[in-house]
Length: 182
Image (cartoon, rainbow, N blue to C red; front, side, top):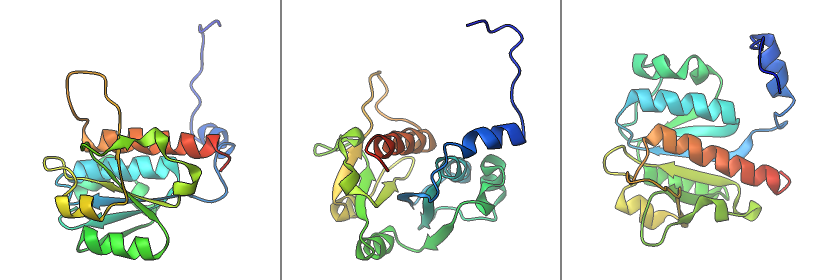
């Protein structure tokens, strides 16, 4: 492939390219943000969630909510494009989504966690809990979860930045759904 003279596509051309891939409805995933400390991470998660076309973000506890300058700096307008809601407690959000038929999955490394690639189409709709940058997903939330998922890592560091982990997880989950005929 000759890469000389490659022209980047812009604006409407980009939108037209991605519209071909877009599912008619959002993917059946809700992300529950469990007491995130950084508004910049929240903004990054908004942007990723919008690009992934998931149903909703649920901002829980101390997680910053729009409008917030730190969120807007990294969200780049996506707070207006992806549905979101606030819940005082992650546990109350879990109960709400369990009643709606969502499987509750926390993204955390534990002795019982399984690679997220092992989920099946029957595990959706899914409420994916993303934990605090320092403490991770709280013990109470882990106990309320139906499954604990991990991202297999191969280097010396044991964890990813929370917004990066969300991005990796969400796109692996979408690939799984698309491969299973969603």
